[in-house]
Image 1 (spheres, rainbow, N blue to C red):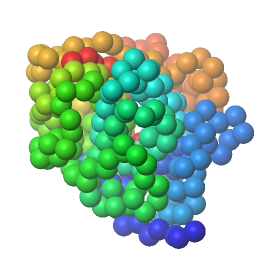
Image 2 (cartoon, helix red, strand yellow):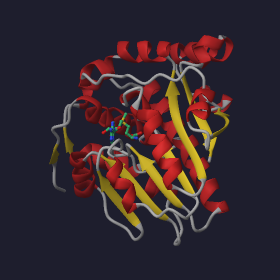
Image 3 (cartoon, rainbow, N blue to C red):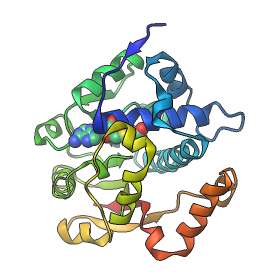
Length: 271
Ligand SMILES: C[S@@+](CC[C@H](N)C(=O)[O-])C[C@H]1O[C@@H](n2cnc3c(N)ncnc32)[C@H](O)[C@@H]1O
């Protein structure tokens, strides 16, 4: 088994945080995500994951978010057997393997060229699976994506790293290129970004966070083709019960206090 050296910094390095969290959760006997590819990738990567200070609570949080998105992607693909999936800022997330899309679906994972090169070394290729090595904010890569098929766009842990003007421009380009579909991503309020900046994991990477979304409808106003469908609750009671006391307290406050609910949430749009 070849060991992979990684030399990622800033926003790119944060992919090791989510990967490690998902791998930790997947090692639990009652794992929600069962992401054996993530676990295997962590074992192969030569990197001191302890510096990211990802604990079981954070790992479970990443796993719950990933599972919630997996369920929505599967649901979309069941409704549109000729769909495409656009996975923006995929990092080393293995959604393609977890969802295991049926024949007929084309899947596009997009991230920076060095991240995509690492993915190629760690994970197998498969039919109808396409890797695009580009910043998502570069307009050129969309030329590789078919226009006239229903599209499920997912971005997990990406939006905070985009500049406040880049995010809406990216989404506007996507919805004008594609005929129609859904867009799902996690969004953070200004207060949410402040909390992120305090997190030891983010501090360890030196990544900077920029784009805050206070009101999901602000994107509707900026991009008329986009319709806000709603927030997707990610913590089901039975999942929350597996969190430690401090994380349960946070989730409790998150439910009760409106400002806390905006800290981090999964948003769903149609176009
Ligand atoms: C927190 S990680 C999340 C990775 C993955 N989505 C997951 O959930 O495991 C953030 C990811 O966004 C990617 N990213 C940030 N800015 C990007 C950009 N402008 N273009 C492409 N990828 C970007 C990083 O390279 C990294 O893989």
